[in-house]
Each structure stands twice: as structure tokens, then as C-alpha cells.
Image 1 (cartoon, chains in turn yellow, brown):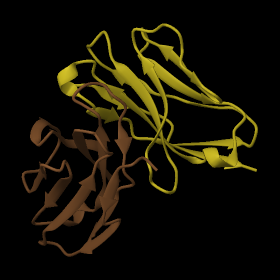
Image 2 (image 1 turned 90 degrees about the horizontal axis):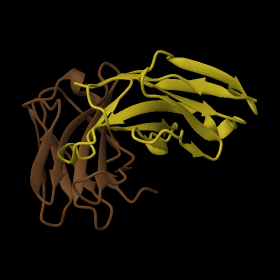
Image 3 (image 1 turned 45 degrees about the vertical axis):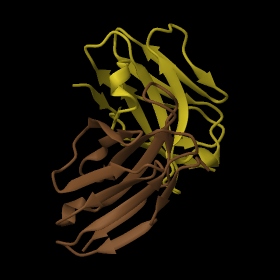
Amino acid sequence: AQTVTQSQPEMSVQEAETVTLSCTYDTSESDYYLFWYKQPPSRQMILVIRQEAYKQQNATENRFSVNFQKAAKSFSLKISDSQLGDAAMYFCAYRSPVRAAGNKLTFGGGTRVLVKP
Amino acid sequence: DSGVTQTPKHLITATGQRVTLRCSPRSGDLSVYWYQQSLDQGLQFLIQYYNGEERAKGNILERFSAQQFPDLHSELNLSSLELGDSALYFCASSAGLGLEKLFFGSGTQLSVL
């Protein structure tokens, strides 16, 4: 079974600075999908970024980028130019490439990001 | 707004009771997923339905059941409730059976007293 680990329960960042969230995972599959979701106080789960394991290029979405290290099974999220609205819980998630697995996601325990003005 | 609607937003009940959580997926989405978010277990996949049929099961207790109706809305039934069932229950939907984007509702917060 796949497992996802986020070792940082909480991270604090100054507004306009950069913060990096760590995520490691364990899988025996060679192809899979990785995600970062944001959960603000509204509780809504919002997709931040997605990475396909077969792609060597790291995904980027505006101020959000990932560092995907397949051999190390590491998938970190970098938030650049942090804004107050970035304050939230961030979850790393894994999805099997097996079509039958559909959208069954395995989540990490989450990292709370605090943004200081 | 994700387009996934969950009702009620909050639910307070007592141990031993039974509750039903409702989810309306995005228009056109055939797959519905239920997730539980609790302090103890984190975010866990419970069950998936596709076009009315159960497709995948996760860590769902026997006291819990779900179904998807012909109009594609889904209900999650929780019975013989225990204190530990207090959690945020998410519904999510996607277009099909594959690897399409997943859209989450805003959840139902269940408090068992």
C-alpha cells in the first residue's frame, strides 16, 4: 500500500518570502500522480498543483512549484512570494495510475502554513 | 465554487444515532467519492461510486454505507454513531472512472456528542 508522509506539522513564512513544504511517499509502482492540495479555513480542498511521475519536468503553477525527485520518492512544494491568502493546511497526495483506482487519493498528514505580515 | 454540493454543512447528534449525508456532484460527473477527515486518521478515502455502482472501497466501517442514485446524487449513511466518528466528511466528484480532475465539496462537519 502506498503511504504519504509530511514531516512538517507547521511552517511559518514572512509575507513575500519563500517556503518549502516536504513530502515523501512510498510506492512500488513506477508510474503515478502526485498532488498538492490547499485547505484554507473555509475547509474547501483546492488543487494547487499536479505532477505526473513519468514527466521529468517539475510542474509549476504561478507562484507554486514542485521539486519532484522520483528516485528519492520526494515531492516538495515551494511557495514563492508568499501572500496572506496562502495561509492554510497543505496536503500532499498520491494517486495510482491504475485506471481502476480512479481518483482514490492517499493523503499525507498535512502541513499548516502560517504567513506573517 | 467547485460545483459539488454537500448538505448539511454541520450536523450534531448523539452516540448511537444514525445520520445521512448528502452529496450532489458537479453537473455531468458520474463518479462520486467520499472521504473522511478526522484528527486521528487524517484524510481517508472511504468509498467510490460510478454511475450508481460501487467501484472501490477504502477504510469504510461496516456501520457506514453509501449509495448513488439514478440522478447521480449520493448519500453516506452513518449508523450506531460513536464519538470517534466525529469528523469532516467530504464528497468529491469527477467526470468518469479514470484519472480526471477531482472536485471537492466543502464538507459536512459531523459532531457526535
